[in-house]
Length: 223
Image (tube, rainbow, N blue to C red; front, side, top):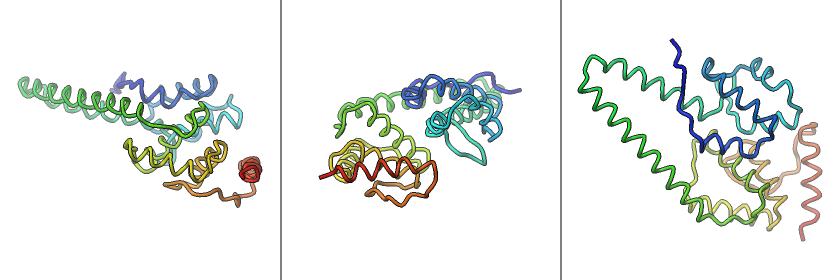
């Protein structure tokens, strides 16, 4: 029998959806619910859930999905379902020993509270970060970058490291917000772990042609 629920984490949900358009968020929510039946969304299912999206909206959604086992996942949802499944199996095994079961529940609750405290500390740490650009557009792309690092390399910034990365990005972009965003896009598209100066030899495809021209224009404006 399939579990009818999973733990919902508002922080993870808002991180993914705060910058999504309304239409894209609807597709995101449907994929999230589909995870209850399929932990990995097939390409055919993804096509069904995104059939009303235009190419730009589809690209927007793909920024918050994680490729897995030939399909796609919302990483935090899949992780939450897997954790609940393990917990449910553990509960079933412990039903024959009530005292042991109580200890198990207590330990699980304590661990949950530790995780919640860690999340609160992370929120506090974020308040100390100084961003080189304070526009909502830059902050959106910076969140994309951190999500990419977490999903692809299992890496989460500490405050000092995040501040250092922002400093490097500002220097590479020569203080230009548009170029900083292009650097982030470049690293995500190339699957790089860090930031590098803009490379203008993107593949000559429709996906990158507009980006390439914008990069060249921005580079010409830097003085």
